[in-house]
Length: 406
Ligand code: SF4
Image (cartoon, rainbow, N blue to C red):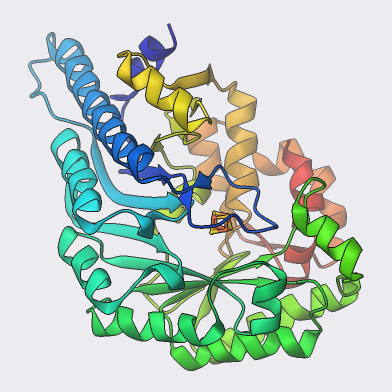
């Protein structure tokens, strides 16, 4: 039942090219703040997982082509696999996979889907798990964009987060990526860390700028109630800076990054011209994507589903020839509209009311104008012709503004 609904929509009309997300749930150690779907690395489990991924991707492509063939019978159209233009290896720590394994998975994607020649293929990597030779092998395997989980360029902060790398290892990894031929490298940094002052955060921002990355993602640390970090903080009496300092961290960082030629294009992301993440943009421009692996989410033409989270359960389902998908459901028109507005507002360019009108038949101003007006008056939202976008100040209150839509 679930898989029928999915397969019916893997060949839905294409608004834009698909993104393919591949989840790799293995890490060398578990960081004290982490809330992702991951577990400790195990070589046997990893080998079985790669097999299962290849299997899942191949089946999705075959199911899509079969569906297309059926629906094309009356039209005399050619059978074509669904088209995609990005592949994204996220985790966990995808750089724990061998380059040959990454190559196999990319090969499965290009066999199952019609993947554009100018594809963007991103791999998340942790600084401690790479060498120049290994990175070069990933590039030969087909990866053309790296995203390093650096988080901080201060060793005391990295230790508090129980990260395995040092600031020097992060710098070295970045240099190795360049030496290996990567001309599209992104870094992740986290702000509002325990005991971090504004000046210390800006040290990390400046250190990142000094490396001249092509893209940066900046996240605020969220301390989850059951995260070991919460206990570590209580035991060591670490605290986070006051809210106004967190706001200053964000605003000052964005100003420094823009001065360095890294333009903000989304609440948490900046990039050099032409280096925006094509894959992640699909999440914000109301696009479609298919996720593979345990816990991966998919959205295709108004149908959304999530794969089973547990790695062993995922392996069992694939081995039994079943679908790993759960919670498959068709979004209501209001949910689709709400999602398009909610995610679109994350972009600096905001949302275009004409595009919303033509896709969903809804006049944004008529439906939400009264609720949006106070935010415009407070300087959090900007209305410019048909566009509605958050101001930088508004980005700090984004969640409150976005609740208007959901
Ligand atoms: S490396 Fe990333 S995914 Fe793995 S435990 Fe740390 S934060 Fe979580």
